[in-house]
Image (cartoon, rainbow, N blue to C red; front, side, top):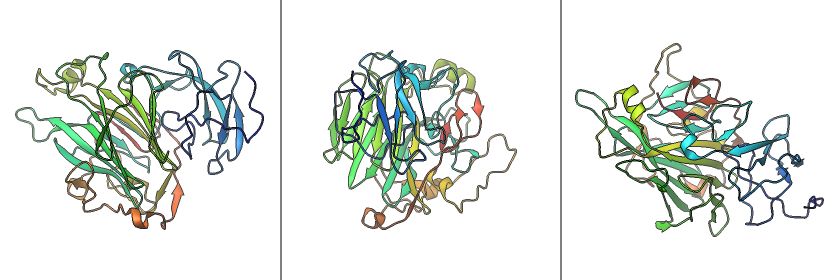
Length: 361
């Protein structure tokens, strides 16, 4: 394959799980793998072309086990690396992108009975309530909501909860993704359900199967044949979701005492935000505000940040919470700032330095 030597030639911007590339536009579909990454002007490595090494010369491959070329446009090294995408069933014990050096989930992840690492780097819990909806991020031009499912064993004062679906409002569009209910988990069955502007959306199963919105500002790409996908919102965010069950081991460790007819299929989610306003709010969004003061007490093993009444919404696409600021008419006039992610968190081992992350207890 010949190298791409002219900047006038289209370059693939591969959407990488949780932001190893700063994707500032959604590319046109193409069948030609790229041997170079272009880092946009808004990244730290602005307007640079990063060439893929011979070990992994291309950015895409029909082989799910092939090593692919990934660029990191957000850090001073401006480097590319060879990585493999793992299957969603490996998410708990192995990162979605795994190398010998990094064994963790990347910044902006959400998993299990929600534990967050906010934009200020502080770990906190938000329990919510089963079968209710909450705003995770509310900005002038972006709203990300969630539906919680849960279970409350006899004698317990609150629900165990998990994120079952996400509702996104962006550029006068609505998009949702849902983990469908299952009595028992079968990894050979796809548990993802999509909708776009109120209509069911079918995205064929298969690694790298891709869908674009009519304006090309929303992209959905399956990361493997089933149960895992990444959503790219042009210039705003990347959201990776993987549907997983609550396992018998989880049930035993945490004493969930789950019923036999429901495995509580839910999402492990990883967010990366590119630009947010200083007024951003929501369960997670508030922690990115420059004036946010985290009330969690230092040294507390399980700090809980409340605010259910501030972030509760009527439905998956509602913007009626007390703290919601979503206003697409005025959003284009609001000043935003690049969002910097510096650290990571491993949902399987506990917290290290990280930002914008949700995990289980």
